[in-house]
Structure formats: structure tokens, C-alpha cells
Image (cartoon, rainbow, N blue to C red; front, side):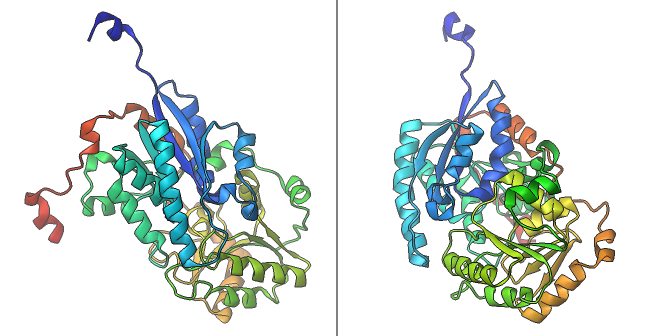
Length: 401
């Protein structure tokens, strides 16, 4: 190295961050903000999936409004409601992500959680020898294909940014090296600490709905491990049918069966004047809604991972989130209308809400963005990062024990 080269400041690490829907965008919003202000990091956003779909609200416009630099747009989501469409979407995405990452040549790829389309950039990065950082590995949710997707992303990744201590322990047992695993919490909770939420009056005006109590938020997705992916929707709607409440439905994910849930929720709302379905709620509006709500019901990870920070009673239905860590605010119920009614009655009991005062969320404290930024800024990106060692032979007996 010459003296001139030695005097030149190192260029920032270029981090390609993938977002495919409103769900993961809420998790990377504050990490993106934090990285943009760090002199050693250059985050660039690659937008794909439901973000680019008019059917799901063209939420890419929200990203543009937030001012984030979009380096590539990967249009791949097929407008169909089948498992085959999911597979073909993944195939289209893999080809386009290979082209995009080959052009961008980032120093690192950052992917989030467990959406099936996140496999596409990870596979492309594997072939291009790009290191991968993965957020939220090591968690459990055995009722959806998300579980296998999440574990596959763990195997493909070189840096693990986990939410909980249990998740860290699972990755160790999967053979990941301890120095590659960093506990940061979940980035969505940073909104609670750093974002200014709407008060009740502003939220009522923005959503154009009555917020007369009780307010119940519904987050229901298809159960992708079942052949009949909409197995839970009838039970949920039956349980809600006679509930005297303001009911707010959020759009389901772009998975097989999701459009059936949309149609049935829309029909329910036409029949119930205090119910409304929203295609998309930006993170600030969503958090503001949860802050004003009296209960949440459904099978969304938000009901397990995020509701605890608001001391919000949450009825978790069925097995989609089976295995996830949860706070005492979460009430589990099978996908049966009577059981859901009973769980909602308990959730809406003021005494139950009062009992949640001071509960601790296992998923973090709202400082994930700064921890993530610290990890990535200090990361040495070289051949050694790419070469994962796994469990050495002499340690196999410890794992089997």
C-alpha cells in the first residue's frame, strides 16, 4: 500500500437493504435512518413484492415520501391466490435480484425476518459471493412456511441480528458461530421510542372512522402450512359478528389465500357500520392505532412481538405463531368461534388490562437501530466473513447431549 492509499479515508460500506412489504418496512425504517447518518455506512434500498403492487396499496410511495434512496425496484409479485403463484414469484424475483445485485455490487446484503420472497435476494447474493446479514433469525412460528424460510435464511447468512436471547441460543444449536450472532431486539419497537404518534383525535380524522370504545384491531393472515390456508377466517369473523366494537381490519400478507381473507373481511365491513378494512397503514398510523386500541385479535406476529410494549391485550388465534416467545398480554385461542369470543371477553376486561402494567417485552427496548448500526459499522468484510465454519467435530457431542 502506498502512502497516498494509506492517507485516503476508507469508503463507506454499501449495504443493500431489502424490503418487500409494509411489515418489514416497519422493522427497517429506523435502522435505515440510523445508517444514513453514519459516516461509515451507505444504505441503499431494494424494493420488491407487495410494495410495488397497486392491489396492496403501492406502498413504495410511502418509502419515496420518507426520502430513502431506492437503488432498485424488483417487480415480481404475481396477482394470483395460489401456492404455485408464490413459487413463480420467487423464481422471477431470484432472476431480477441477481441482475440488481450484480449491478449494485454492495458490500453486504441485509434481509429481514421470514417472508418467502426474501429467499430470492439471499440466493442471488450466495452466487455472487456477497455476505448476508439477517434480522430475526432463530425464532419459532411452526404454523407457517415462514419457519422454514427463516431457518434457510439463517443457513445462507453470515451475520445474525437476533431479537431475543432464546433466538441467539437456537442459532448456536443450529451451528452458527457465536461471534456472528448479535442480539439487537426488533426494529419495529424503535417507533415507540422515536416516532411521534398521532393522538386519538388526529387518528380519528386520518382514518375517518369512529374510535368509540372498545376498539379491536384485526391482523389475520393465511396459514401457509395448511392445505386450506384460510382455515381460520370463518371462525374469526363469526366471533366478531355480534361484538359491539369498532373493528379495524388490516390487509393480510400477499400469500396464497390472502385475497380470500380480504374479500371476506370486506364483506364483513359492508355489513357492520363500525368495521373498516384498510389496505395499508403506514408504521406511524399503525402504531398510533395500536396505542388507542383496547385489544388486538388474529394470527399476526405483531400481536405477539409488538403488542406487549403497549400493554395491549392480544388474542392469538390458531397455530400460525406457535412457538414464538410472548408476553403475558397474549391470550392464545384455537380457531373456534366460541373460544375466540371467550378470549376476547377476557382481553376486553379492564381488570386484565390493568394487570399488564409494567410487563417487559422480550423483543427489545426500542434501540435496535443503533445496535444494528454499531454491528455493521464495525464489521470486517473479507473472505473470512464468507467462510462459515459451523460446528467443529469435537463439539458435536455437546450438541447431541
